[in-house]
Image (cartoon, rainbow, N blue to C red; front, side, top):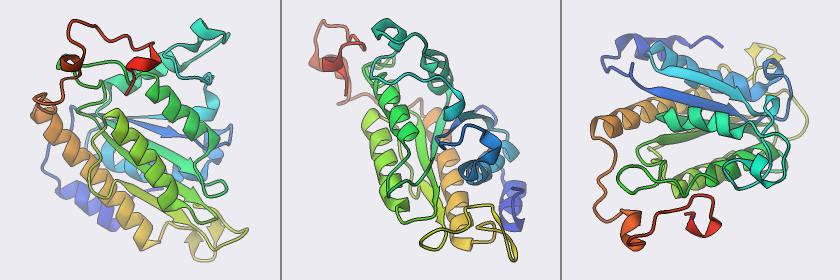
Amino acid sequence: MTLNETQSKLCDENSTDFSDLKAVIFNTSLKKEEEKSHTKLLLSVAGDIMSRNKVEVEYIHVAAQQIAIGVYPDMTEHGWDRDEWPALWKKVAAADILIMGTPIWLGEVSSLCRVLIERLYAMSGMLNEKGQSIFYGKTGGAVVTGNEDGIKNCASSILYGMSHLGYTIPPQADCGWIGEAGPGPSYGDDVEGGPAGFDNEFTQRNATIMTWNLMHMARMLKDAGGLPNHGNDRNAWKAGCRFDYENPEHRA
């Protein structure tokens, strides 16, 4: 969707330079074709705001990738014939902002969303140059869509997982849209008055606040060189022992 008047005005009036930031947006819709995804439509609000402010944005449609199931960095070393996660991980590692989008199924995140969180967890033994989790200094947010209750449950699952791994979660780092209970239009479906959800002030407000807070927090962390490592140097607890990120015992 194109940004509404308020969202466009905020972009036009921005004076902060975000041009050195990178964002990766994962869509964990179960639809194989990205263009049919309702979740992608809401994710594009965040993506469009960031792009308008010169953040480098990349969308990744998980269903179109061959991501193996497991909790190791490269599952081809553990019995799988193919695993595209190592290549995707390079994009995640280089990004300052990570947004995960999911539809709601039986009140929970999609199965692909869980796989993605597990593959992120597979990297949690990796440390930065300060001896901190490799995810320190990065920000994370969640976008949820569906036709049933579960926005807050899904968002809490995603954001807790990201926080536990080391992502910094800014205030109001989630947004979502659900239609009326039961079968009905999904986000962006044609209904009387225009695409469903596009004029929902609650959804658009939260999507906007989430995106700006992600950019502001990423800006502050980058300018500060990340988080100080006093008190959170993981190597201090394993004196003389280099962490092996393939060893589950060394994971967060």
